Amino acid sequence: MARTAGRKGRVWRRNKAQALADAGYVCWICGHGGARYADHKIPLAQWRAMGGDPNDPANLAPAHGALNRCQVCGRCCNESKGNRPYKPSSRGSRDW
Image 1 (cartoon, one colour):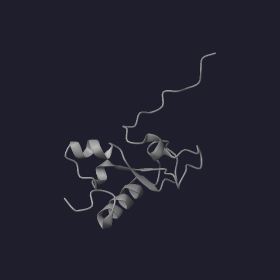
Image 2 (cartoon, rainbow, N blue to C red):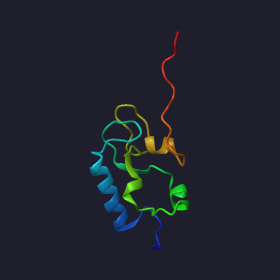
Image 3 (spheres, helix red, strand yellow):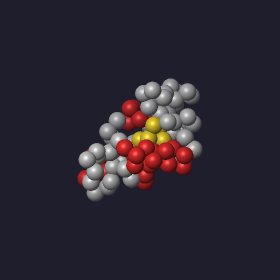
Image 4 (tube, rainbow, N blue to C red):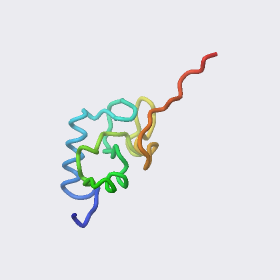
């Protein structure tokens, strides 16, 4: 494996750009457009434990980040997910 394990270098930039373009810059967490960050769908530590390459585009998806909040819902989707697998929110409206 290369000296830089993950998010640096030409390979990372190329795979990030490919993941963003393939999904049309739509955040995979909130579903709104304008995402400019690449998020690891399966957390990087778990992906490596399964033998995955950190630069594998199959594990990358667009997400909103700290410097690119979602314009619709205002979330930093990537940071709110953190180093956990994504689980859709089960919160809904209450039955009054």
